[in-house]
Amino acid sequence: TTITSLRKDTRLDNLPFIRYQAGNSFPPVDPNKMDTVSLNRLLADLCFILGISRGKKYRSRHSSIRQFGVLGGISEKEVQALKQARGEKAKVALCFMWVQEFMIREQLSSGLGQIPSAIVSRCFQFASDGMKGFNECQKVALTPFPFPHAQLTIFFNLVVICYFPFLFFAYVNDTTMGCIMNFITVLCLHGLHEVAIELEDPFCREPNNLPLTTFQAQFNEALLTTWAGFHPDSFLNLPPEDSCDKDEEMTTIAEKPS
Image 1 (cartoon, helix red, strand yellow):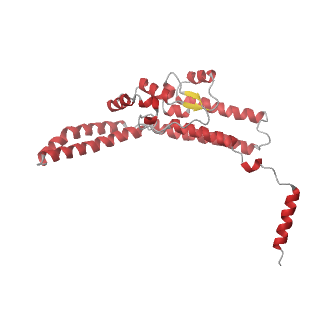
Image 2 (cartoon, rainbow, N blue to C red; image 1 turned 90 degrees about the horizontal axis):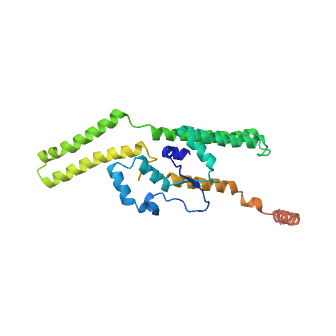
């Protein structure tokens, strides 16, 4: 839910959650390598160039292709509860409360065994650290550049586009060289402006957004590996006592001076 809120999927009608299947290949980092996306690649690039790829309809289609896998799946009641919560923070807080409630119930029902309370409290600490990281990412996603700065940048870009051709025409004798210099100068300034727009929200700016689905799949695999990743030596049978005694005798004999 935290990742979907950063990608602004929580404002959509259908939440992009599916049951995670362990062992499947990770989603590609480059969206162009996804088969379902490559079919509409030309249309997506055209929408991006025209600046219409930020709308709810396009984002809904974009998110429906890149769904997040959930370990164990998500029930219908959980989906309804998330839909009833208003706003991204409310949905994330609801999921955070579910995790805390699960840990408290396991502790009260002795489901954690003889683990000391000091060690169990670290679980709550790590959950709190996750919420802190989410809030830091949300600052990046929701805090825009200052409005006067953004408007002045757009205004100066327009001034450069309209004024620089006359400037190069007046001071450069070669027309071809003047056109090339004008094109490169305007391209550099306008490119920096587009880079600033992409960095303003790196989570939902197609096609330069961060591969959140890939991060989620790798995190799920890390959880599964940690859950079942006991040390392999712990499953090995210990050698018989006789063999241990023989090994000790051989070691003692080897250590005696000749």
